[in-house]
Image (tube, rainbow, N blue to C red):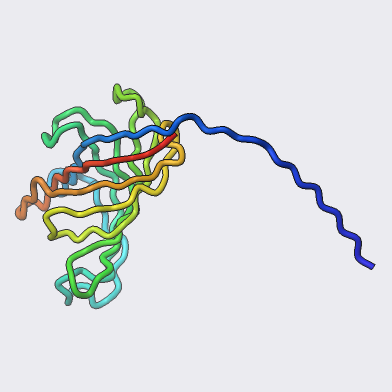
Length: 170
């Protein structure tokens, strides 16, 4: 004979009013002038060097997030994460990243994070990715971000990308 008992508890939880936040900031990927680099390749599956799309290559990033396109503008935080070249047909990556807002950045987002994931077709004029979560001010965040390349220096491989984000959060 098997005897089982279960006790269920329910609690009421109320959320504050939902907020809409829209912001623009800039991703500064500077490869040439930094040691160690902010972007680091960690793995490649052969024949990555034989493809035009870098298929199979994985890179990890920890780059500045700034208020304006000028690399010397106020730093709001860091963009930390990784991307995987995941297409054999086009130059695109699967990106998984956290936007980490810095303490002392002078914004109401100090210490908060936003999590993004999605496909980034690197040669497209405009791309869109999903905001899938957050912490701190951005708890239970969801939304989207559009990306537009502002600068791509072929000599240094330095890149500046504009992020226009729309986020719902509590």
